[in-house]
Length: 362
Ligand code: N2P
Image 1 (cartoon, rainbow, N blue to C red):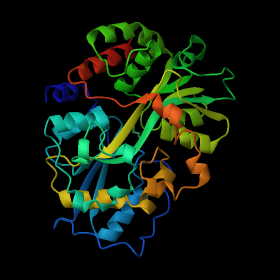
Image 2: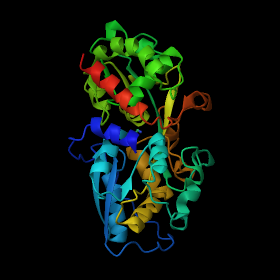
Image 3: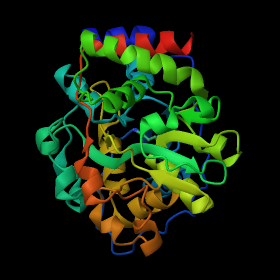
Image 4: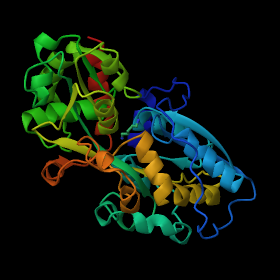
């Protein structure tokens, strides 16, 4: 609890809910052969709290059409923002979408409801390498939604250099020509990777080591944006970005001038899952939604709108070759071998937040 409460004190709580803004796919047609879904809660409501630009509104609408369950969606731009509101929300949320290290922390703090796996037959669609991961052995509390990495996007019309590493991005000549995620844990991990420090070794000593690197890097950034970092690149406001892979994949689809680079030093592999807070009031409706979104046709529609690394192998089969070959969506086996997930780092999370906040303000 201590770690989460500390993060709560520092996290940005003032953000208004925002609807997803990326292009929305057409409302999917329910598969006629679909087995009858188990009944939901008597109260036909569901409150989802998810990352922005991650669950297409058309999918939410299709769920409501099929089940009669009215869904309210609120979004967040970082795990820490989600945690702050979860603690302050007094049981408003039925379904949340934390990344791996946050699931690990929430399980430790007994903040999640075990998921009735009988209600999630579509779990069979998830690739074995994304099941029973170390943050939730047996998937007792979480069901994988999307995975992905953080990498570099280069506008090759504006940058001719062969960008390979974080240090290649954060150069004086690119001052105020860079967009990065507004995410302290991510930013510190890039600094660590550039110095050869394992991304989960977040000690006071390593934070002091990374400070001068970030002191140099952060003033070079023009835009901090976790919701839609692609926008600054699309508008030509910046030439380089360190962004979520799904944002990179959308940019590659938009214009050939954009290039995706997995940083040579390694990168964070995030696994974002669906989980039900202990305080949820509509647990069965949440389970219905989880099973619905794991349907191959539905999950493929999610990939169409938000092209992340889809752990749903049955959905992957429905993707076009172009979608499957997007290098930002689907890293190679060699690239994956050089990626790591984040671990829960307890109270050190607060120190990361303090460090990045103070350096951004310099
Ligand atoms: C979607 C954000 C991706 C989530 N907008 C990264 N964990």
